[in-house]
Amino acid sequence: MGKIKKFAELNIRKITGGKDPVRVVEDLLSRRGLDAAQCQREKTSEQIRWMLQLREHEELEVLIEGLRKPSETTIYMGVNIVTVPIRGAYDLLTAALEIADGLVGIKVSLVGHYLVLSASLSAVGISVEDLEYHLRLIEAQQIWFRDALAAELQWDQFPLE
Image (cartoon, rainbow, N blue to C red; front, side, top):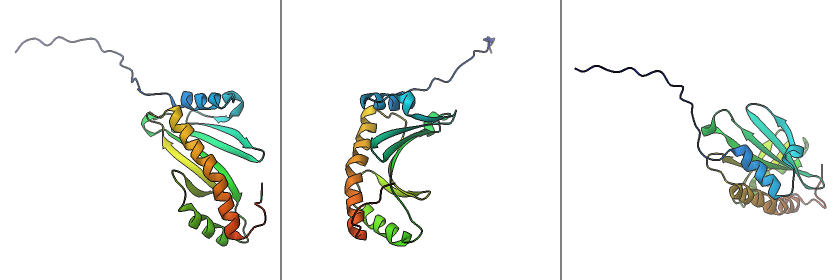
């Protein structure tokens, strides 16, 4: 057997591939004519949250979670539809679940005391076009969902927050 040559230990760093999800969200905001720094509401080592004004009483939340583990990083986009009241919660949630069957590419969920339309995506390989597509899905179906919910519950007007 020959001699085995020993090499000095190298400092090998992990190089993650793909696009930076923070940069992708910032590019999405700039495409919409918004300043990412002004929209940013919270930043920690694990997550970043932006709030975008869609209409007068509507904000879209964009949240990146799991920044420390690139393979587990997710991007969440959601908009509040209505506050779920204590009185009549059963009727509202039942109607919302029945109408939710017609949603395409997004989901309806109960977050705290809000009914929310949202999309959750893996950040691995995500592009600005992917985010823009899901944002358009939320915007397009939000009005339809509200109208269908108001009709189902026989509301004269939709309650705004």
